[in-house]
Length: 255
Image 1 (cartoon, helix red, strand yellow):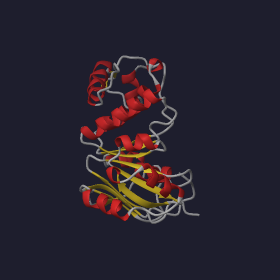
Image 2 (cartoon, one colour):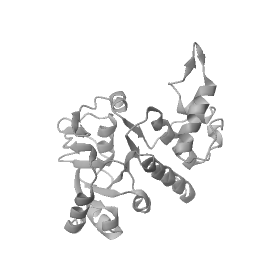
Image 3 (cartoon, helix red, strand yellow):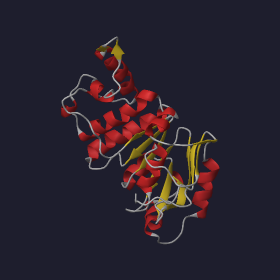
Image 4 (cartoon, helix red, strand yellow):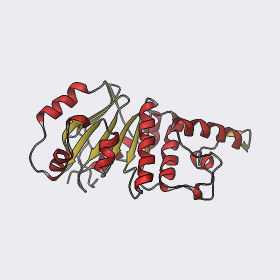
């Protein structure tokens, strides 16, 4: 059984690419490959045109790829800055440098235009703000690409709007974003391009402005075909690739 086969997907510089598809389409497996959580049996990953081996999460981070996933694990009894640096605390000699961590956290939060204080307890945050902390954590190593798996799952309308603003801020800050998202209104609100997956492969890629809800839903369900004009338009407008994925394959699982 192949979780992925024949996948060919490009994420451009300063671009938000959304991956959509039904349950079991391979979406989560794909982003797990890019995040370094799953190693493909074959195929190549290109970073700025150079082939790289994503042998683990640490290696992906070294290469400038950071990730935040659905199950956001935060410590409610700690403040925002402590959660951002959890396991990677800044130190001054043998002592933890709380002042330095809060100052750096403030800079990261400002880049996301987040209305949260570094000293604020995580237990007091909304669902959208908690997701923002998870996204902010990815920025500590100055990544070029941020991988998000269902960043708006289980959030209210207001909280979803907050998270979409954070994703837009990432793009404005010069980052590229690859996100799995089942919520089409959110996808159409922030994505520059939409990749549709079905049965472990990418069946269509569209520039968001050149497609519609009906076309995307039809492709997810396997009804009709992709708009050739839409796909051609997306390819013409595609920026210089930052990450390309080609044929990661043959690992059991589903996305």
